[in-house]
Length: 280
Image (cartoon, rainbow, N blue to C red; front, side):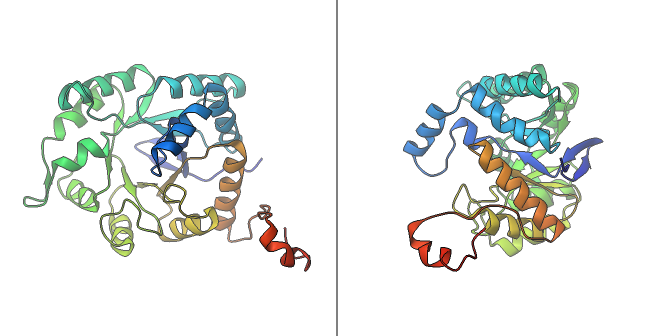
């Protein structure tokens, strides 16, 4: 089995694909009905089935908010495969109050084996001060993450966050940034975000590469893999093992500059193309 390329972040070896969890936990970014379907469909064993596919390629890092369901699924996948999964947690403020909530999230992440811990965008971006070119009151939280034995980073939707953090020498090892060909969840044009990523002092983890299902995998993945650096990573979530297999193969093919060995969709509207015997 071919192993997916890896990079080093904060002294830790990570695969260049990181397993996303929106399609496990019910964050569809489409509709309440779609999110409900995901939550009702997924369970520990189904999520572990998907994790197993990624682990076959040594894609062994998962990005998730604090979640008991994900903890159970990760443990199940580890037991099935004998492989360890690197947990990247993204705690944020909750109903207990902003500061209390993040404290609990950091503590939860450490207690559940987190290797990396990034304050979520909902905590980070409100602290981005465009007047002073700084991120206000972030250092104590990064220090807390270090004190709990985890590696800090920042999750953001604002490209300024990366620039300010770099210039202020914040104690972070990597960034999470939304980036895709549609500009979904991107506050400025994609060429600007691409430039910010290219100039970042630390590796960047790209989220929303398929714009939450709005882009076909060959289209969305071709865009991100061709415009990020060798030290950057792509976070991608899949609903089923079959989708995981396809996205991994498409990504490997793009990185290796070859045609992906995936089957094309079959629909009645393509019947005239089938007659030409050109489908895979």
